[in-house]
Each structure stands twice: as structure tokens, then as C-alpha cells.
Image 1: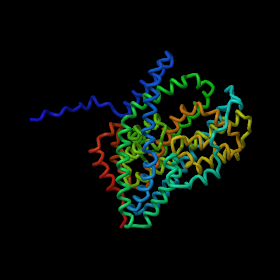
Image 2: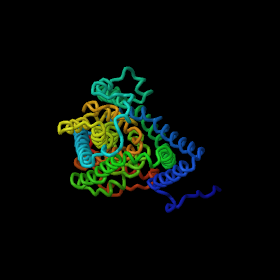
Image 3: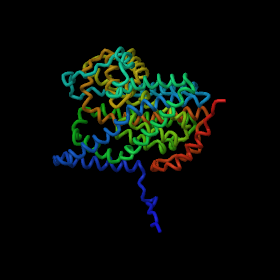
Image 4: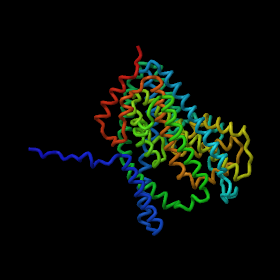
Length: 443
């Protein structure tokens, strides 16, 4: 006779968002203790825990992006209004980016983040990579099919995946074996990365602890206004613009959106990787009632091109900050150019360290000294957390907006979405099947 299976009472299950919050608080306390007491073994332990977590995320990024983009493009063949959905998605990406960059510019002009910092042009250093439009355009096409994966050049991986996806659509039935294999590989990668995501509370402890050890609170002093500007700008977009769009454009209750999307937003905050968070972002988007076929296109596409935090708010405020440090006067034409670069150059932020590339692209376009990038490198890990959280929230928001406008959103799923532990696969599968039935199929 087999022994009865023990189950954990539901009341004792800690929600995923609470696990990450506990990891954040514990990491901050341990980091402060390690820094104050110069506890070397604890400093090393925190560093290793955080580093291993990020390495595990990075491990799957290249193949995940390739197969996610390829499969997402080919999945659109199952939808009779695919072109309309793709166009609406792109337009909303651009619209929200414009709003975000406008907010960044207004905040920068009002607060003057570069004034009174005590920093000078001598404190800066030129970045190793000097972004330019020519480099950006020529860098899209890889020299071979191996290098983009070994060097984690996400933009080139996206290009190859898009070409492969379109080619597969043109081949039709002949490409079915490849598409079936690609779908299987994608599901395998997502499952493996899902295990890594479940380690996020532990990774949070290590990453936050290491940040406190390395930077403490002293660093923020010189960059107090700049740091506050980034956080306030992102918060205005995240908790102001996004809820307003949900309420007015989609006629949805914003509370349900944040309740469902919060686990992905939290993971993005601590991991600082939109691409690494992509499987969780897609899962919460589907749980919010977005049809799976559409979510599997919009989320991977957004994870590599939709960056309201990194490509809109940050370069706008950073450009004003650097201009003030170097005593360069910007005019209305420069501000319009910043907005243009932010919308068109968003793809340059693809990957794990894209904001720096985006900033060099913005500075070179404006003719500002690239040494300004060096001024912001030290503070970058601190502001990157809020930037990435805003990125991911936007990547989940747009599919919800488009689905609601196109009347393919499952409102029951949206209203019942929660931030409960995301390992309830059985219930999720049932919900997703209902969601898929709401998506129109080609005749």
C-alpha cells in the first residue's frame, strides 16, 4: 500500500512576486552587512549567486530569440488578419515610444539633471563602441551564421530569424518538418529557461546584494537628480500612461493588467534583461487573455524592439544630462531628433546591454561628445532595473491593447488573471485553450 502523498497547504505557498520581494530585501540586507563589515566570503557568495543566475539566463538567449522570432512569424499564417495585427502592433510600439520620449524630455528640461553634480567632462571616457547610423544599418546583416550566436548579437539573430520565417512561409507545406522541429526546440528552450526563472528569488538576492556591495549609497549622490529623473519618468509611463491607455483605448481595468503582469515586471527589474524575461512575459500575456498565436508573435517581437525605458526615456534624459555637463546648448531641432532616434533606433537596444548602444547612437546623431557615455556607466546598473521593468510592462501592454481593439481578447481571463505562482500548468493550459478559440482562423 503506497503512502499518501503530502501536499503543501495553499495558505503556505508564497506567491512568486512575494518570493522576489523577499529576495530583494534579503539581498539588500546581506549586501549592506557585507559592505559594512567587509565580509569577503559573503561578498564572494553574493557575486557568484548573481553571476550564475545571469549566466543561466544568457545561456538560452541566442537560440531562444532565433526560434521565438522564426516560430512567431510562421504562426501568423494561422490568422486571417495577420497583417493587420502586425501593423497595429508596430504602430502602438511607435506611439508609446513617442509618449515615453516626450515625458523623458520634459523631465530633463524641468530638472536640469547635469547641473550641480560636480562632474566635469574630464570625468568621462569614450566607450569602446561608438554607435553610428552606418554601423547600425551595416550591423544588421551578419558576416556568417555562427558569429551572432557566439557574440550574442541579438539584432543580427533577429534578422536571420525573420528571413528564415518569411522563407518558411513562402515554402508552404515543404517547410512543415522544419517548423515542427523549430516549435519543439522552442518549447524545450522555454521549459529549460522556465526552470531558471523559478530561481529568480535566489538570483535577486545575489544581484541586489552585489549591487549594494559594489556601489553602496555614496554613488547616487552625484547622480541623484539623474537617477530620480529616470525612476520618475519610468514610473510615469508605467503607472500613468499605461493605465490611461488601458482605460481609454482598451476600456479595461488597469488593476487586472498589473495583477497579471507583475511577475514579469518584477523579474525584469532584478534581471535587467527583457530577452531573458521573454518566456515569463509571454506567459503572463497569454494569462491576460491574449490569444496564444498572437502573443507568440508580439512578445518576442517586442522583447527585441520595444524599449520604452532603454530607448525612449533614458536617452532623452541622458542626452540633456551630458549636454549640460559639456556646456552644449540643445534646441528644439535637437529634441525632435532625439524623439526620432528613439523611435527608429529602438532595435539597437536589443539584448542585455542595449541602452549603452542606444545612448551612443543618440549622442553621435546629436553631435554630443561620446565621453559622456563614460559618465553614466557607473550608475547604469541602478537605473537599468527600472528601465527594464518599464520595457517589459510595455511589451505585455501592447498585445493587450491590440487584442482588445481587435475584439480577440478573452475578457474573462483578463479579469481573473492573478500574480499567483506560475507553476499551475494544468490550469494555465485549460485557460490558454479557451483563449485560442477566440482567435479567428483563416477560411
